[in-house]
Image 1 (tube, rainbow, N blue to C red):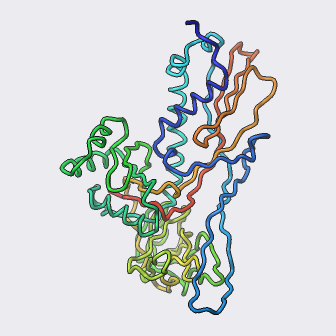
Image 2 (tube, rainbow, N blue to C red):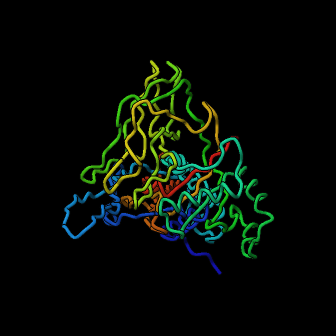
Image 3 (spheres, rainbow, N blue to C red):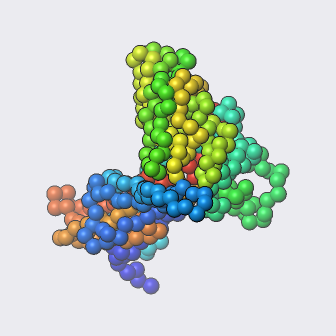
Length: 409
């Protein structure tokens, strides 16, 4: 049977299918598509607003007690275009779809998926303050379950949970669970690339894109410098981050990194609904790199310190001279594994414009990811030039619904 010419729509759909097949992070998180751009197309820098559910306080008794309703949203800039460029001739368009996919689309989409996934994970893991494990040792089944415990304590639904293991942790984890009961389907899945199986309430995958985190350089006896730092949460006020003034670091030798996890003595985690202290120190993550010159640092942490109201997340504001502990050893590389519920993170894509006056162009959407394909003739080089583009943004919606399992390399 003669091959028919591949249309731009067919090419784009097949490219998107391959892109999805190569990713086990992007396909497991919340993927949103903004239909506002389905007609005219989006531009770099366009902001997409992702609204989050409101929270309320509960009164006791029958007397009406008005409260402020604070609407939260994440303003997510669609600021990144990722793409792959290649030459596709008329002759190549007469190949069968399978041959064309193997020769052109699969290698191109593999590279594109790897690049997008790595950058997504590089950004997202740094937003997660929750961490379990003894940093000096590798993963075992108890630490694996402790990550699930943290998600449950933060009210993550039991469904749609994923655990991504770096290659060294995948080996350790497989060894740790080899003596446990495994269903026949899980054993079969061990032979699929990247799939460890389902256990402990998680779909477990191996992922080579999880970055290594190297802690900042620090020393001294760091303490907070200033009383009652953080928000009282009055009027249900919500803030995303807090600036904490500190001192006591080694002068001129301290440089904390985005993604470093810290605790403050006397500031404890609370149950998300009852607001009762758990007795466990609240973990915060450093939002951006910061260095000192005199042993003093003002660090920006997430989540914000909120000690009251509907959005209360810790037992109290941070007191003066509270001891600060950084997770891990100074200037040390740690492997990262990531457990998360689907809604912890979001990846948002929007439609790009379809240009006029080109040989062929198409825009398709699959799994809420929009891709554009364009081909045109370059008279200067005498070549058919083609490009695949994805315009996207990403953000941590509910980082509390994720947990890092950290280990020293």
